[in-house]
Image (cartoon, rainbow, N blue to C red; front, side, top):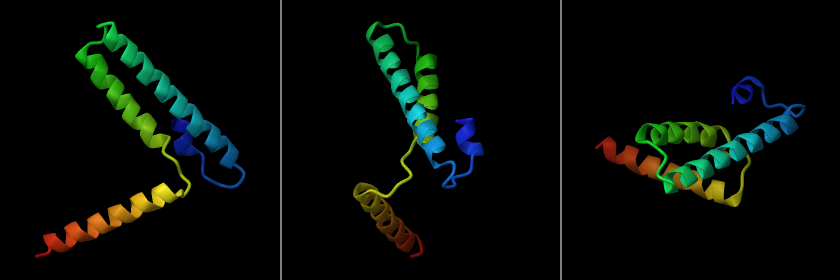
Length: 92
């Protein structure tokens, strides 16, 4: 994840960053699968579960897609509408 924060997004580094994002997503999925198995075996403490959630949050944040798909455009528009709705009601 540190490399993702350091390396700038340019056409020359696009392939490297895509590989790093895919790797972060795969590591997060492996961690989640391990946590589910450990929970099923009743070998996961509350501290470990909270720590795993913390790590998964940061892996998920770094591995978020950067492109524009139709779903991400719809999501961004819904956030804008919700934001304008809440800000207009906050001003009153």
